Amino acid sequence: MRDVAVVGFEQSPCVRREQNRNEVEVLVPVLRALREQTGVAGADCDFICSGSSDYLAGQSFAFVSGLDAVGAWPPVSESHVEMDGAWALYEAWVKIQMGQAETALVYGFGKPSMGDLPMTMALQLDPYCVMPLWPDAISMAGLQARHCLDAGVLTEREMAAAAARDRRHAMQNSNAQLRWDRSVDEILAEPYLANPLRKSDCAPISDGASAILLAAGDRAREICERPAWIRGIEHICEPIDLGVRDLGRSRSTQIAAEKAGVGSGKIDVAELSAPFTHQEILVERALGLSLDSSSQTVVNPSGGALAGNPLMAVGLSRIGECASRIFSGEADRGVAHATSGPCLQQNLICVLEGE
Amino acid sequence: MCPEPEAALTAPHSLEYTYKRSLGPILSQFFTALRDRRMLAVRRSDGSVLMPPKEYDPDTGASLDGMIEISSEGVVRSWSWVSKPRRQQPLDHAFAYALIQLDGADTTFLHVVDAVEEGSMSTGMRVAARWKAETTGSMTDFVFVPVSSK
Image (cartoon, rainbow over all chains, first blue to last red):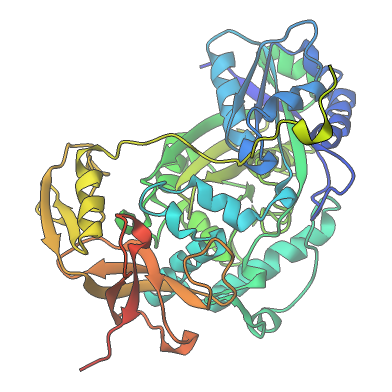
């Protein structure tokens, strides 16, 4: 295996609605900042890979225009995944492993504000048996949350505690969208948005973009003083039907974490991309992170997806948030998580380490 | 030649998926049975019953083909409440999405419960399919309604 590291990370602020900028206009300042941070221009990278969704833009091949933010002339080697940018990073990592690139630019972007996001998410479901019923994303998550509550897997108080912790952490993150300090009791006093979920249990709808620069070996050391080396990266998918899965645990996260070697050392920081509080708890448990305060792992210092949720960039941002704490020396080893599909169907785990 | 304004050509433009799809050997039986107000499931190699049926076992990938008819009554295993339905959703008044396990099936599937109010929903409640007057062979041919306890 080649040593590959995250050597730069930038993101746009997470906002409810980018009223006056299109996706390219959101991306351009992010990529410019990444160039200033690393000294490497996107178009000079050996490989470029992006993650976005044409369903958000409402237009086929909408992702192609995203490349305008990089500049496609002279011709560049480029690819795209209709997935979160974290999966674009996985593809770029494979490309570097294959020896076909030394540097790679990865970016993710999305403007879910242009549609009705919970309904747009219904389009990812089984087109014959489920999608015709148009279950919105919040109802889908609610089915999983109630299963967890009924089965005694977790409590509403634990969910509220996750909601409070992430938004409190986000007060230190100027790019986060939901930044507040409320007690667990205050959250539990909220009415249900969609029983059993309260508004605070749900991630916000955010427009935004983020970008990461990857580099191999000595090239990484040239670009970054303290690169965040990718020690393990794995993604695992479960069946799409809720009825054939154990909704009270995240089996795919657990398998990915084992394969990525999460448990082979201490974890200083964990950045999780779960868009609902009960899902965050399931992911924490699948990673073997303890919820109690004596744990040495800081979970979601950025606020995680529950504080800022730019769809198609949110998972990539978790890797970036984790890496930036390794750049600064604040953490030596961290784990980042990204998710895709309904109710944690597919999960990606990335273990990062400083030298 | 300059056409008169009323001679301008127009055409409707609707964004849609216009392809005809083949449902395959299992789902085509399933949807045809729905049209006849019958529920078909499939038996897996371990003897458990998968509803809705699949052509391939979601765990092992093994090909499945033992279709059996099961009841259109069952139990709510989880539910979430929709207080303000959106335009596309199956009912125009508040309802529940639920994971329903039909009698005779070992798995649940997502469907709709037309309950009067949130308070009448509970995990473990019994529901039965209420069929539309005209069925077309689709998941929207029916919704579930609570079965009053005996």
